[in-house]
Length: 584
Image 1: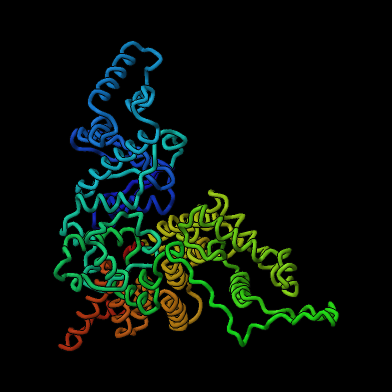
Image 2: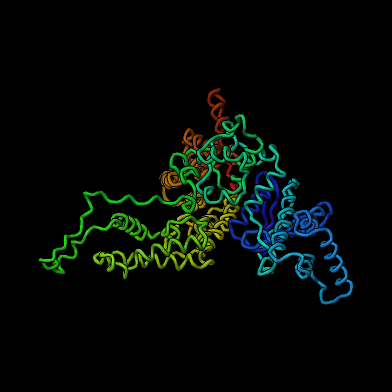
C-alpha cells in the first residue's frame, strides 16, 4: 500500500499484496536513478533514520550501528593502528571542546588532516561503513512498517568525501546476510516452482553483484541457460545459496519465471545466449582473401608506359576490402533502423568512456570520408558520408556522461529507443504514466468507467509500450461506451486485447479483462480459460480467482439441476460481478 504527499511517497514494507520488500524498494530507486531520502524507523535504539540516495545509489545512512564505527573499521582493515586512532580521537575531542578551527569536523576528516590516511582511504571506508549499516537494515521484518521516500535535492554525495554504494552488490550482501529460505519462499511464492532463466542483463551486470567465485558459477550457469529450482538441487549446490542468488536476480528484474522464462528461452533472450560483454571477448582476425579473389598488381615494364589514369578503378583488391564492405553494410543497416547511440557502436549499456573512445577511434579512422581517397575507395563516398554522420552523432551522445546516463536510463525503463528520441522524456513519461495509471486503477475499482478511461488514455499516450496500461485502456473504454450493440463492442474489445496479448503474452491484466468481457456475453468456457491464464501469470490476482471460483460453482449448480437465479443471470449478461482493484 502506498500514499503520497507532495514530493513524498509512503510504502508499507512486507511481502504481501500492496506491500514492497526493502530489497525491491532499493532496486526501484536504482532503476529510477532516484535522488532524495528514504526515512524509516529503527527499533533499537528507537528513532527515525534516514538513507540519502543520489542517482539511485545510497551515499550515506545514519542507522545506529555501534559495531560499524569508522575508526575501528580502519584499524581492522590495517589502514591505521590503535595509536593513530587514539591520536585522531584526541584531536577530535580537543578541537570540539575548544571550539577551535578544527571544530565541526568528523573523524575521517581529522585523520586526513593529520595525514594518517589519505582521502581515497577515507572515502572507501565511509562507503564500506554505509554498506554495513544498510546490510543491517535488511534484517528488519516488521510487516506493515511505513517507509517514506522523498524526492529532494541534498548535498550528500555531491562533490564531497562520500562515495556511492554499489546498489547491486548491496542487494546480494543484504540478502545473503539476512534472508533465509522461508523469507524468500514467502516473497517469491509459486515463482520458485516453475521455470526460471536469467535475462541478457545478467551478462552485463554480473560482476557488479560480486557473486561468490567459488560456488556460484554452477548456479549462475544454470540460471543463464534456463532451469528450475528443483533441478538445481544436486550435490555440490547449496539450496539456500541457490535461493538467495535467484531471489537477488528476481528482485533486480534479471530473472524471468514461469511462461516468461519459457518464452525467453525459445527466443534466445537469455544470459547464456548473450554471452560475455564484447570487451571481454576480442574479435577474431579477419581471414585473408583467397588467392582466387586477390588480384596481383599489374606487372611493371621498363619498355611500356604505365597504364592510363582511367584504368585506376581496376586496382588490386586490398586484403581488408571484404571486412570493410561487410562492416559498412552493417553500419548502414543500423542507420536505416535509426539505432540508438549504444546500438550504433555495438556497445553494451554499461560501456565506459574508455571503451567508447576505442570504438570511435577505430571507426572514425576507417570510415571518415576523407580517408577513402588514400585507400582507393572514393566510389563509396556517398555511402560512407551517411554512416560517418550517424557515427559522429552517436559519439556526441556517448562521450558526455550526462547524456550517456540519460540514454541508458531511457533504454532500461522505456524499452527500444531510436536515434534522436528525447531520452529524458522517455524516462519521465514512463514514471508519470505509472503514477496516472495507479489513480486510474482506483477509478476502475469504483466503476467510474469514463474517468478511468480518460486517465488510462493519458497514461497510454505517455507510455505506449506499457501493455498493462493499454489493456486497461481498452477495457475501461469498452465499459464507458454505451453506443451500439453490446456484443459487437465486446467482440471488438476482445480482439483489441488479443493483440495486446500477442505482443505481451505475459500480460495477466489483458487476460483478466478478456475474461470479464467474455463472462458478460455468456462465453463462460472462454472466460474460465482467460481467468485461469491471468492467475497463472499473476497468482496474486484475487479478483480473477473469485471470478473463476464463481464460474465453477455455477457449473456445479447447473450439473445438479439447481436453479441459477434470475438476478444472477441478469448481472452476468450486463457485465455484472466482481471487478475489484487490480493493482499493477
